[in-house]
Length: 110
Length: 114
Image (cartoon, rainbow over all chains, first blue to last red; front, side):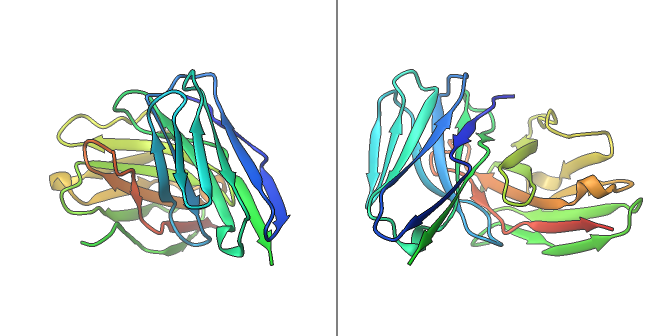
């Protein structure tokens, strides 16, 4: 079982601030995904990264996959209240199931 | 259907009773997954079905937990002799074989064992 540690576990910031969430593991992944989950709902996919060093941007969100494919980061620029939620990374080896990280709970205060 | 459907959305049961949780995946998705999530925490993998292959049951926490998938579609997760530590949200997801679009999750079943 791959263990993915996310940091910080909780984050509360003011609207307009920038933030970075980290996802770290000792395992090498063939692909890594980031999800956002709102209360009472299932997680929703934000992005998939598959190449070491890959950077993907989704509006104000920037995702980076580590060169060794063991870690990833999510950077949010000018956070908005709508960004509030639980952010989860998930890694998979080959075509097996994804293992999810411990989660980062983000609250953006208006 | 348009999304992954789970039922019931909430279930309260007495300790020692058996419960069945249902998942109806997206039509055409070959893979189906069950995860468990404690309050505000990450997802714990339980079991994975892929097509007609034998399921990966490596995440099931005890022999009280079992799951089946009939006809490659609907899945049922059964928990026998429920314990208070089984209380959690049980999430089902499905995906195409390639998984390039990620998992599509249902809204989950919130199980409370009293």
